[in-house]
Structures are given as C-alpha cells and as structure tokens.
Length: 309
Image (cartoon, rainbow, N blue to C red; front, top):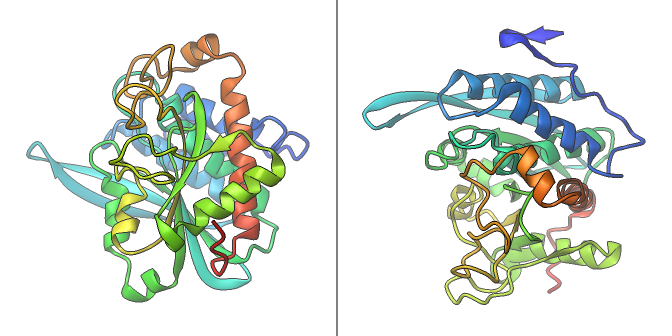
C-alpha cells in the first residue's frame, strides 16, 4: 500500500518479539521519518508526508483516525499544517491524551527532535491496541510545534468544556533520543500524579529515569518549562506528564543543554542518526526502549485517584 508522495504504509510492521526489547518499533518509525521523509519543516510538503505516514500507521494498527487541519499566519504568510488523531477506547470513557510533534526545524534531520517522540508514540499505540486500558486514549501527532506550539494550541483551544473535564491528563513526548539523562516531569502538588506514578514504575522496574532535580529555582523539582506541547493543555487546567532526555545539571541549569560532551543537539546539524550513534553508541535504543516501557505501563496502570508522592 502506498500513499501520496510514495510513502509506504507497510514499511514498519509489528514484531512482538522485538517490541520493548530494544525499542525496535520506535526506532524504525524514527528512522523512517528522518531518512525516508527528511526535514519536516512546518507547512512544507515533507511535513505533509509525515502526517500521511503517521495516519497510515494508526490506521494499520486499527485505531479510529482523523486529521485535524489548521492554518496560521507567520511572517505575513498563511501556513497550513495538521494534527493526526487516533482514538483507543478503554474501560472508562474518560480519556488521556498522549502527544508528540512530528515537524522539525530546517537543521539536521529531526531524529531527536522529534522523530524519537513519534516513534515511541506509535510503538506504544501498537503495543496497547488489544489491552483494555483504564482510560480511553487519544494519541495525537502535532504539527507545527517548532513554530510556536501551533498544533497543540489549536487542538487545546478547540476542546469543549466537557472534553476538558473528561480529560484525565496529557502526556507529552519530546526529544527522547540523545540527552545525557532520561526524565519525567509533571505539575506541582497532587496535579503531578502522572509524574509520581511514573516514578513508582521507574522504581519497580529499575528504569534509568529521574525527574528535574530542582537545581534552578525557576523550575521547581519535578516540573519543567512551558516550551513544548504540554503547555496548552496545562493552561486549560489539564494535568500533564512529560517525557524528555536532556541534562538539567549543566549549562544554564534550564534543561536546554542536553549533553556534557556536545551541548545542544536539537535544532542543530548534529540532530542526525549518524552523529548521535557515533557520539553515543547504544544510547538511542536504550532511550527508546526505556521510554516505551515506561509510557506503556503508565497507560496500562494509571489511576487518577492515586496521588502518592
């Protein structure tokens, strides 16, 4: 099966023996987006091809799928982009949103930022497709994050009051592949239940994931800034969780300097598979595997009523 632009919907096929062993499914999706499609700058044909590929994968998995088109004005020009939305029913009609942006900047190939997040999103959707999760799940691949969170803002701003009230939380996946450390963040206080429950899973499964240590007073321990797709949902009062790989203990202590050895990789020409694999052999597969395991278990066992610290 081939969709417009020559993108094969069957390029990545599910392999139960490999899923979560080394992040194989997530890795293949990540590689396809970065190398078969390339730079996915908002409003370009490559971003549209990425949208079509993600839609085809959700449909192959068997999820009810839709594309939400939107436009915005940038530098006096109208830009078109879209969100790809897939729905998985659960035990409850209450829902949790899991999102990752699929666009990239015009430097590098967007392997880390954010083909890695989309890869984990798609792998997790496939692993959970036949599991009766506590909540229904909306998997959303957001367009045009790099130009001002356009896709996530559009989606959140078009939610009805009933949809907001029915949403238990939002989990954001952004830049998972290259940072020195793997993190999970969330709101302060009881609204941080997604982070808290994730850290319980981390402890139980001995995963190499931590949370923001709070070395910068502007970003209290366990939280993060509003620079990614969780922010519009947070602004609506929806609790968030956020998975990311970076390093909060270097640079300006703000989570932007991802690595000790090479500084920032996102938004640079270093954001390629060749650079990351050569600089950090095995890191991508370790990260994708770990984040896929963690996200799957969060969604399998989430309990909003639990607020353990």
